[in-house]
Length: 281
Ligand SMILES: C[S@@+](CC[C@H](N)C(=O)[O-])C[C@H]1O[C@@H](n2cnc3c(N)ncnc32)[C@H](O)[C@@H]1O
Image 1 (cartoon, helix red, strand yellow):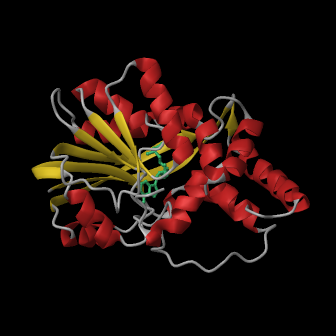
Image 2: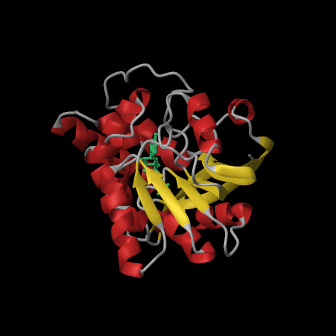
Image 3: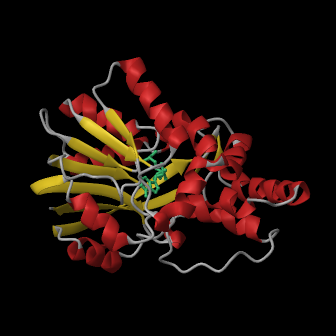
């Protein structure tokens, strides 16, 4: 990739490696899982016909395609080749006006975009140098342009991710030490930190709305579906990277037991808590 900020090389490798392939394979299931969250994000972002939208860390393009269908013009930027290939394939299949750029959002030249709106569904928590990244993102917006993104709140408010992880960790060697603000799903859990990042990058009118959801990890397909998904993507799968088969099997059984309590019909629903963050350039 030509447009990569070196500080994000580790995340880029992650999203371009096996994890990116597994996210791509689970695109439809993930988009169903996040249906209500996507709706909440679009309520807050309020894209209007004729507006130009930028989607940061757009992944397989669900929110870019939705934005383009509402406004007529959206550009998704993502560092992951497999996820972006899926996004482009979906745009071609549906005749969407959405465009996509394979790039690190920290390094991409946004200066010619003059967008009305910038959105992101869980795509802005993976930057190593947040000040630099958000200063660059702001260049993509017109003066007064809107920013609206969704990110996870505290881990303890997100049992849908932490319950399987806690079960898995009992069978895993001690994990590498990480700092709470390191790039990752929970890097933007702290309102004060995110406000400081945004205001430091020149955004104004920063606001946070907490929203809670019940998320069906099984996608209606029963316990095994939920377990497979936990082991394929997200924090439990990250913790399993490079582990021997016997450990993976022990974790699979532990996660299955932990999630069995929540099985109802074909669903395995646990709580997920997000911030809807809004600001203006
Ligand atoms: C949790 S996924 C969310 C994807 C998508 N927005 C969705 O909701 O399905 C995080 C996304 O951020 C992308 N990403 C991570 N770091 C990035 C960076 N520096 N620049 C652009 N995209 C990045 C990843 O490749 C991945 O697609």
